[in-house]
Length: 350
Image 1 (cartoon, rainbow, N blue to C red):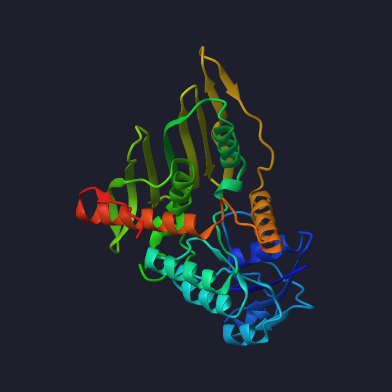
Image 2: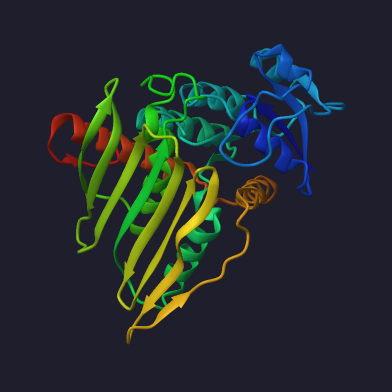
């Protein structure tokens, strides 16, 4: 049984709490939040863009803490699940690792690659697992694409186009603060940066054009180039002001012998495929792909099962590993650098 402490009870903390409750081999034993209302189990004001609404939770048998130091001092748990604002991830993960805890941090891993490196060194020194919550590869469409590409059935990758756009999340505090959340680049697009890194390896250069708000990328287009490869990879992401389309994402992935496509959007509160998962094959064949697990919570079940597997068996994860998450943060940093400077940025892991 893996005993879990959760630091931060907002929307994602609630989702993780609910999912752990349904997974064999996991038990949430401790919670930490600075809001005393949350420590009573009153989560009725928690809001997100999917999943169940906040409600009154029964926290009997769960120890609650207003301060992380007190929670770490008691220490009767194995894994710290960090669902606090991104700026807090590095210090809290490092403190937990130093106390012999495994750490699972929500994405982004941090707001700078340098802080990511500090987290990785702390994990190595403590000989503990450091995992990062990049859930996107567990969503049905992205899991399907990853399986299909890795199978080699359609030959090698030739390029891709990714899209991820939201209406401005008005309920999130400090969203446009560079030292707190980092805006849509780190909150939103880091998903696709991670998936690009997972599929194609590390880009060598990026050029980004777009608009800014409060000095942060607001809406942009990026073109990625890779040394020694003729792949063409692009991504569009950011926020729009109109709330009628609260969310959309999709991809078009080119292989030697096929193209994989899909696009999903939430329009006027209703989620629908604009393009269902589709394979364009040779000889003009178009094949629609039926996928199960459309409820986003299914993806979080798969993600947290992978966390438990790694912690229980001491195995690494090719999806949730810290090095991959660090690279995604570095890609985002270089996109912001390119946009600010108006020229391509070289991407190099230090």
